[in-house]
Length: 193
Image (cartoon, rainbow, N blue to C red; front, side):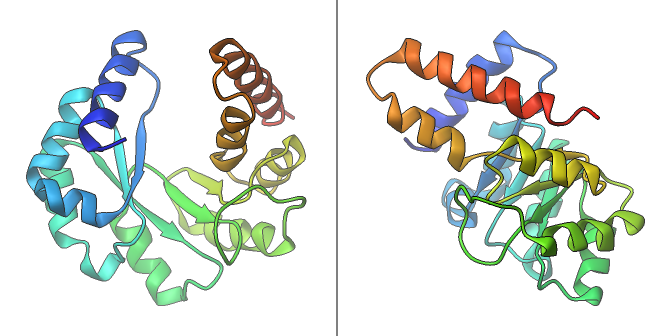
């Protein structure tokens, strides 16, 4: 996989569905390597709606923000359990699209349970955000989705659990589609009261 292949895939998805929101979670070096303005321009041309550069802090985001605004792409930022009040204020004043709440400390990946800290973080941020709040990192079960939505989150972001299904069914495209579809349906149902 590389940036060109990813953008080509997004273009195919966008041709299939004009409405589905498409957000990229990417590292800054890939944006910088392509050229900041070119990256955002290319992303917009294939139908990207939002970009989150996971390793670009708010304090160093001006070049990305300028290119995002110029291209009409939302710039998303991470809010973690360790985010200070002053930093949170900067993020909420600057971000567009949505806020990505990191549900736990550590690396991403499927987890057995949702931490109380996650619920506390949602309740801490929600009153101050005009943007939707989506929670990611470790969200891998319907009960996780139900928990974050019940606490006030607007969405749940699932990555590693889907990647694990793809790995388990590698080499069998029908099994991949079937398992990811069934899993996604269960997760979606969990967003409803």
